Length: 350
Image (cartoon, rainbow, N blue to C red):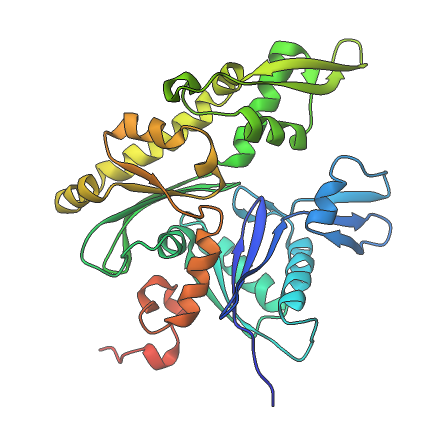
């Protein structure tokens, strides 16, 4: 007897998560692929590929196939998804799962179609597409199907998604191509400009995680932090180490964080008054890796005067929400793309 293992996929710029129905999140890997330049064969995927990022010889290229929340390299994305789907299916080529996959709310029809195509070519039997803010709200446990407003801010690696959701649909939203990658790029640019030091993406990410913050840390009774950073001096060309402080990192992050706050303001300004009243009562929920940046909840609270909460497992919300769609296809029909709604849910028109 054949069986399927339906899965939900959070295809993220920085990380890809796979949720299996009945099992929870079973795969969590960086969205990185190492490719042999001479043969175009994939050498490794995920954590193993990320470990060699920036450290490979000329014969091996490490590729991040998604940029700013959309597919930048079609073939490499297929290879990455093939690996993940095969692992989710227990390395069986006989099992072709039904897949719910997430896309940013601001993608074009062409970009949405590209996600569907690569997932089908990677081995999915059927592909259902859901927008990331809806999946994040579901995964965070917000009452998206009720006639009350739920506001979600999902700060991922490539995009930040802001949405107000009510009655199973997105009422107002804003999608910007600013996220963890732009935070890292801002740190790299700051270190280069102020210290004449060139650092790589992994080093910038470590700085962000270890000492990054959105507001002064002494407001929480914490001391400001510092970290030693190693890189290449742009003037001498020699290796050098410097010490950078959390105040300096906060200055580096000022511009991308301002764009996130502006997106929240934009969405609130386009929210109907009655739903705005609900948000005042219920607050704003933060998800995604960016929600883990120290003090970002306080930054958004100060900018909006709204209560701001960080979801219990912010990194997992989108993947969990995609999985919940599999459990409730009938109830979630409004959240899926029109072409994704199963035919048995369709009603005659005309």
